[in-house]
Length: 173
Figure 1 (cartoon, rainbow, N blue to C red):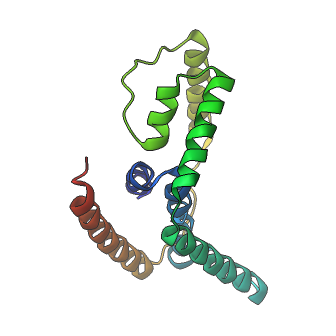
Figure 2 (tube, one colour):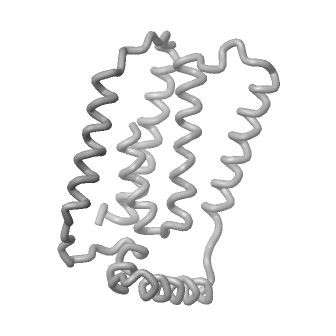
């Protein structure tokens, strides 16, 4: 499910920009909370204070997502954004076209060159992941099949509805 969310996040960043797409996509934490509470009973036995904090925080996050979703930027803000991109490109010695392509969701055709340091860090990261995977043990988890079914149905409905809107808007281009 996380990967499906990541795919939608990429489209969000491409079509509405990183400053709006990323905060909206971070609402995936609400789905994680629903799965944890409903399917895995993670808050079972918690105090009323814990429930109030979780519900309150969720409402605040949802309201923030709504505020981000309906926000818009002015032309002046776009000019500031482009000026900042140019300034940072110069500061860090980056190709300005590369920076603009990344910020607007466009493809950048210049091939990336990987150094020995890149490959070393990738190998170390992979080794750490494999090491932890070898140490991991299967957790004992009680699962609520009714909640799982309900959540899967809700997510599939949202996936279909959002996918349809995205298809009509972008044709997945």
